[in-house]
Image (cartoon, rainbow, N blue to C red; front, side, top):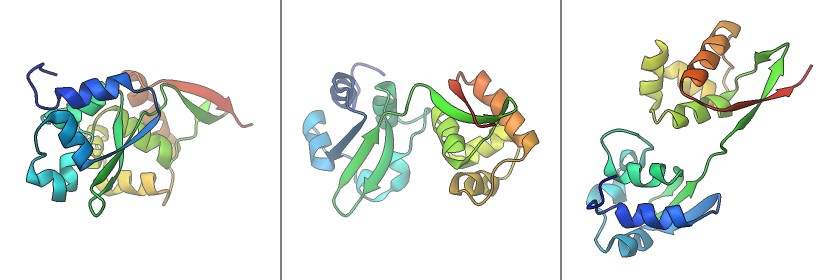
Length: 163
């Protein structure tokens, strides 16, 4: 992040924190920045997305190791959380059992939207959404591919054997 960015104070604040979850009001963020948030931050959920390209605001929290977990426009507050550095994953006979939480964690780790993640995997966005919601779990072939993508993305997995 460029030192002259108006979001630099947010980055510096989050870098000093070691809490796994931080709730800030929009007013708190504006006080840190010494400037008002853009109007789109008050009404547009996409402004708060965890994207790794093209958004200085998300670069601030993501560079500090945080992701936006929850957003409340009514109370004008945002919840940032630090995802774990290593994910414990269930394995059956050395096969990772991918579930919705793990798929979402990988997608977030890669800084992609559902649509971007789907494009990366050459599947439909709806499939990613259904995995993340737990409508169904990835097939064995999809699980193998997700494991390869995770390795390429340096997504750290720790085994938790279950039979």
